[in-house]
Image (tube, rainbow, N blue to C red; front, side, top):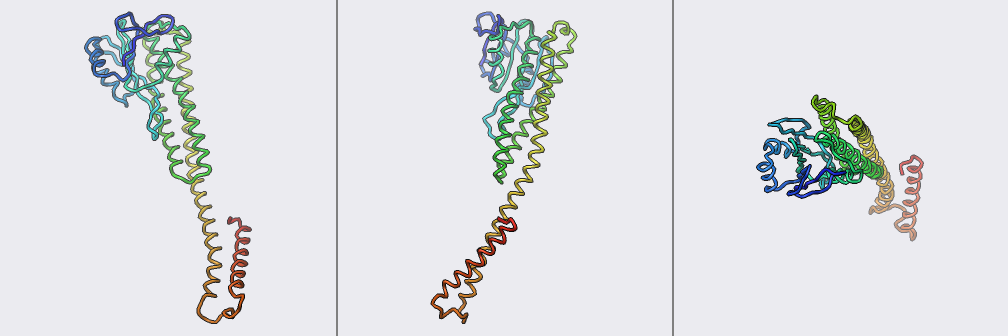
Length: 308
């Protein structure tokens, strides 16, 4: 889908046949691809690079076209990998600015609303690149908060569970954090390259540069902290699960021993040999009482040893 925006005290939606500043292409179909490649004539190599989900952040220039690829966080419908990252391509030349993504994301729409609320005017293409980089870092932090909630929920489940599935939940979250760490490192390298472009160095807003640097650093540090905590937690809970299993096995063994006592007594008195009770009118109740008595003694002994 192609969406057009004009730059007027915030980014306002426009139409294709009207004046526009920015084209946002999200999951373009074949007709929209043809429009981007043949009418606007962006390099096809740029388009194909952005389509690759594993593409790393970088800057590239071809025939006057600038290509910036940064990594953005996305929410996935896959329960095995609830959060992931994807490339967002930024392509511009002269008065044409295009953002291209093949995955649905909340970042662009949120950025548009933010620009309208704050009535932000974009100064130039590089200014918009930095603002999108800042917005991506903010969304990394937002998704990290959601990941933290999932960690707490998995932690509560693990405290009373011995299932491998609960430990695998933490493993899946750890995988998400690894993707976040890798993407944030790539974005950090991209940011320093953008900041050091000699032709634009004097035109940058110092406050914007500082904000991007701070948010990127905070996102990286937060992700690293969560990853370290999660690694230690997984090791600890692997031991907890093993300990819980040992406790359950100990209780089951104790119960088996207690149940074996009346079985042994009943087996002895059930033999087809004289046993002094075969003619006793109360023989059955005596055997039952002896079984109950020894079982009760066994229960008290195991309880004293904390086997129950």
